[in-house]
Length: 339
Image (tube, rainbow, N blue to C red; front, side, top):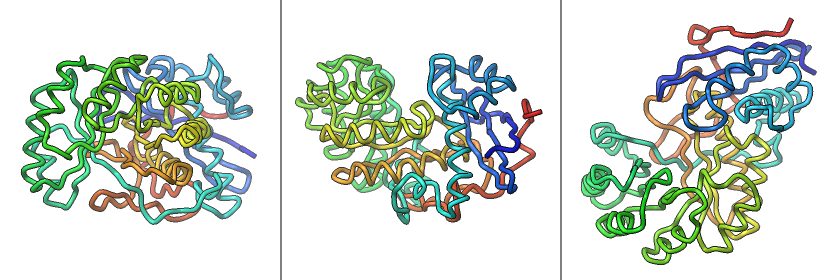
């Protein structure tokens, strides 16, 4: 099916590190795209990803047999799965989410990651009300920004707080008690991975939904979290779970009575478009409980035409396959290609 392929690198704008675009061609000239984002501190790690995607033998082997194993960076697997699915969907004349077996929605709910008041207030003026704030160690500056945003919006914001596993019980409870009532849609990974007891405790103490992210690697992890009463939903990053692995987690969440949302991993346009198609499928799988996804943030690397951003939602891309149009060639550097 694949006649030739190439791996191109780009310099990411947020944060440091590089990303990679896999471009594959079939014998009819169709082009499939996938992305691997090498994010420091997450996933497999930039050095491993770069070494793998710079190896012609490694990429060719993965294209021949796209399967997860210990030697394959999860980011590279996601790029390969996406690129192959992109072409397969085009062959069928359908979008990627339809190729996965689901209908195409008009739009997807979206919360915008912001880290400063100026950006947040500008987005508020544009009509956005769903935001995501990082709160390392229940930082007081995050609480202050949350309060100012809520006041500026006259109490209409819905803010998800991502603690990245950095909270302790007492500071977490103090933070949430000082937050404006009903301003927080959910708290993401408040405590270190594996501390389900504290997550269940915080959920019971505050009534605020808890989302688990980094600790959710398998369907068994979801079952354990649900049985412990530690979560209302799970956060799925397709970049680290794979295209089909993400859907497996969504089905496990639905089976356990939990919701799910999809978020980027600071991907550029190609990876985020793929995440949008996954999110559309996840919404269909977890149809009883929809949560805002995290599919776009100001300042992320743009490698092609971006999906249209409207207040609190992103419009689904049109066309067949991934729906990625106008790849910016000048942003990309060739690092590896088929012979």
